[in-house]
Length: 113
Picture 1 (cartoon, rainbow, N blue to C red):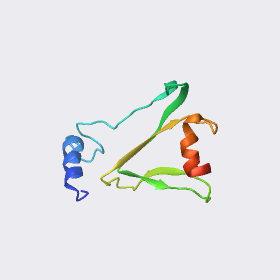
Picture 2: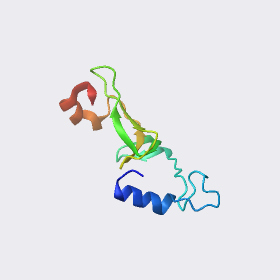
Picture 3: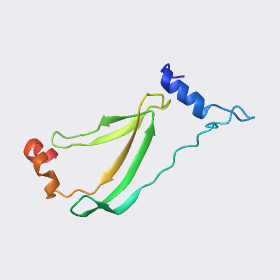
Picture 4: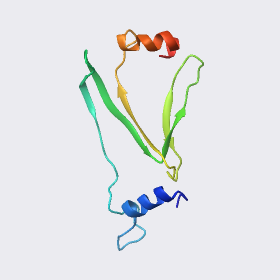
């Protein structure tokens, strides 16, 4: 148990073991989530862009993972118990360095935009 009442209640309702073999992992009323999105036709109002789903971490969190000062890199992770109150997922979209959509961010954040 996570000691977080809302998470524990949801886990009990959706993932409670109700199988004759009580040792069977992940047996409950809700199956493991599976999703995939991939397209090269994500319309942004001007042009089509590529977009795809990247990951999903139950009990996960977003963590900075940059190794250089002028780099922006973010990742998602979860601890082995996956007992955080949160979950995270990612959607990756094609962006080019000269995209007009970046102009206002480049003025404020420079190369990190």
